[in-house]
Image (cartoon, rainbow, N blue to C red):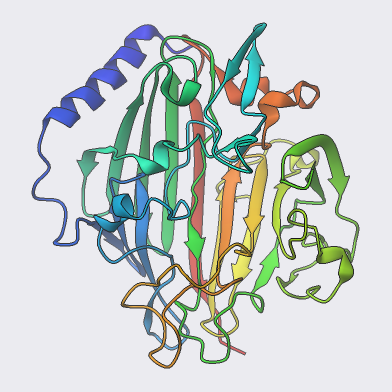
Amino acid sequence: MVSFTLAAAVSALAATAAAESYSGGANADGKYELSAEGIRAHFIPYGASVSNLWINDTNGIERDIVLGFDNASHYSVDKFHPHLGGVPGRYANRIKNSSFVIDGTEYHVTPNENNNNDTLHGGPDGWDFRNWTVVAHTSDSITFSIVDPDGKEGFPGEVVSYVTYTLSPHTWHIKMVALATTKKTPIMLSSHTYWNLDAFANPDTATALNWTLSLPYSGQRVGVDGILIPDGTILPNHKYSINDFWSSPKQIGANWTSPDLLGNCGTNCTGYDNCYLVNRAQNGPYDWANDGPVAVIASPWSGIQIDIFTDQDAFQVYSCGGQNGLLPIKSNQGLDSRARVVEQFGCVVLEVQDYIDGINQPEWQREKKQIFGPGDEPYVLEAKYVFSTKKSS
């Protein structure tokens, strides 16, 4: 059990750090750089976000393969940015009817999606729209902290959280820890990184539809209604169906002409915005960090591949169908011969997390994974992204 002393200590750490000035760590663009063999990245306090991540492609050219802005100050100016690289919280993904019940008490949180019919990523002022505090920064690691007060966005109780990003050879490691210090409350976090493995430089296409995706443990997904709210069902991803990425790897756009794909990501939506379950229990005890990735994604043009390992039990895949050509790419990305924007399907979001809206589906029995109170073990999420380069085809 976690004592109140530990929770108080973490809270004090964050409060102390907030009073200090970290003037030497950020560069002229307000970003903190980390590096290790084969990988370099920038992070910013806004949303505890990754803003740049460079990997060498198959030709040895360094590519920045995440979406973001050139300057850290622009994140707070562009309030319509789609959660670029941040940590959504205190509850990631969607909450049905912007409400939930804990121990017989119904709570209402601030709605911010679908004409205010649900809450997405913690509400209009969720964690990835706030500035976190830098509490530690070295050449290969950075730790951010946030104190979320009781009642913020309607959530009960104070939550203290810290997120540590560490780079090691060809690897980005994430560790998120959150403590409920005063009341029981929902906690579910994620990393909302938008990937373009070609850095928008592929002259043949600006989309991600020809990338290969594998989800070897995901023979099931969460059933949703037309606005992507879970309806309580768990659906099979039948072999060779549009959602079958488990039986063998396939291109994201392999089934793009299938009529089944229309509506797969919501009413009148073609593509993917789906929560796939990570079914590893049949293997018995496993080491999440070494016993095989839960997802692999690769681009044939850049040759860049990511093997994703995590301790989480679900995995959201979003094929960026909501992009409309208005979000700019960074100055180090793209081609001068093409509009410097993110086109529809020009990226992929891969969110490690737990079952979405599990707080409103008691039959799923996710309460020990998603509801935390004083004295409970902390919420913990870990993931690592291992980068490699294959010969382009």
